[in-house]
Length: 133
Image (cartoon, rainbow, N blue to C red; front, side, top):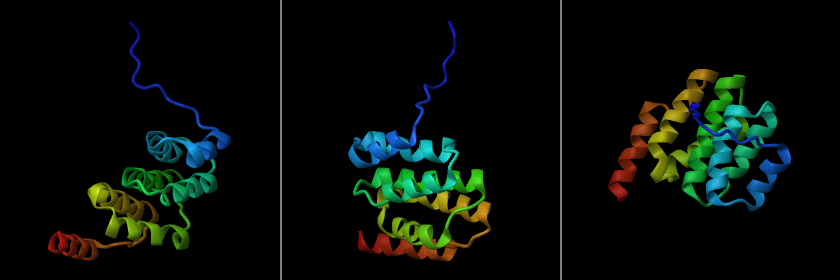
């Protein structure tokens, strides 16, 4: 019996745009990670992750941040003026995925030599959240 580790779905630009527009939450969540791993067009991958960061579902948004971290690792670039506000918003507001978002931001910082949301800022956000809830 042949061992299969994963069935990898191939995303074309048209399919990716269709999923962002009309796909299920599960499809959008998968797309966010797949773009980070596989898309050869840095600009398209980043723009699709930004579109996914505009969704209501926190899992989709969390996966979009992870997708951006993979884009940073692979291409060694992201458009900071576009990406940073979304990263900071997710860090503040996406409680369900916060630990993954912190790790993704740390990865982005490492690969791009950025300093978004340093440890003190992350601590302050966690403390504020704990006080509120």
